[in-house]
Figure 1 (cartoon, rainbow over the protein chains, first blue to last red):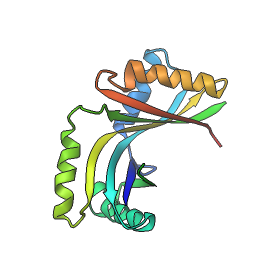
Figure 2: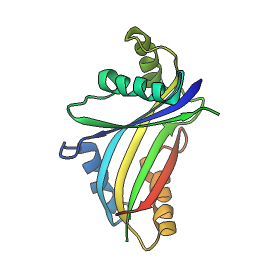
Figure 3: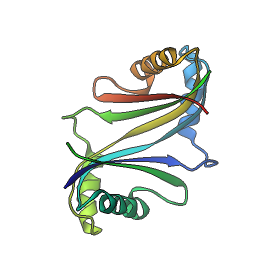
Figure 4: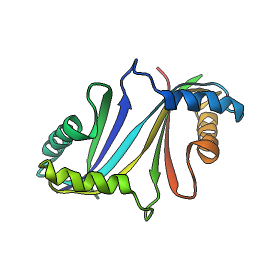
Length: 84
Length: 84
């Protein structure tokens, strides 16, 4: 079975995010007020072949820990759904 | 009202994604097979003050068009939800 996987990688709370701060400082100059707490992360999408959804999720978690994220400073949120 | 906003920016289909190709080529060497179609994008999260959800979404769409994405080569998917 083919699964659509989406991994959203964000810096952990408390880790400094200069890219987010820069965006936050730039937005008011463009007329966008009321924006706070900007955080910028990575978004990785792919298709994965696996026996079932649980197996797909396990494999994606393993990928995150070993390759897609730096677990010391980053958190991953994983979405897996059967591909249509 | 405060809204949690999440903007997922991906390259448009057909636009070459060297970062995604590199990940796709690296994964089999680490023992992860069956991965295809890897695309890497940006994920921007922030809190936004707005009158209602429709106004918040309009403001985020405007931000995407003017600042957060390059509409020529990138697509944004926007999620807005009332902050708890």
